[in-house]
Image (cartoon, rainbow, N blue to C red; front, side):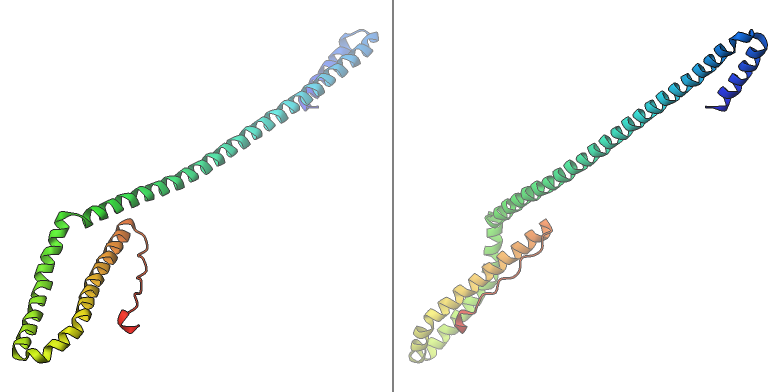
Length: 195
């Protein structure tokens, strides 16, 4: 019961006592009881409405939180999937570019120029020295040359292979830097002469 209702009912009861005939006091009590009962029913109804509204708001808030969490999960999954797809596409591009560069006529010309600039003079110098030695004492050098022929060829091939592997390693390091991946571990090749 609120104080406003109580004051209002008290004022009406006082006025009713002064104005109504004596036999109507029971009717007055009945009317006051009905007013208070109506107020209790209205209060209970308002409480239920408030509870239901509060439950509906809480349910809607939970649904919104669940939707937000679901959207965040979907977003995280799609972001990871997109990163993987982008990395795979970048790998394909890098491989294609590295393949194009390795087979490029311009790169082949640069390699040819470097071979002409470095290997050719070295071979000419070595062969000139061998020819001078042969001219000076051909009998002394013939058995050595024959014995070393295979070794010289193997050594030359090993040097060319080592240079190619160094070029492959350099290409791998460059590709790793471009793609921002850890550089591949260098592979240890046993020395065939030590075996």
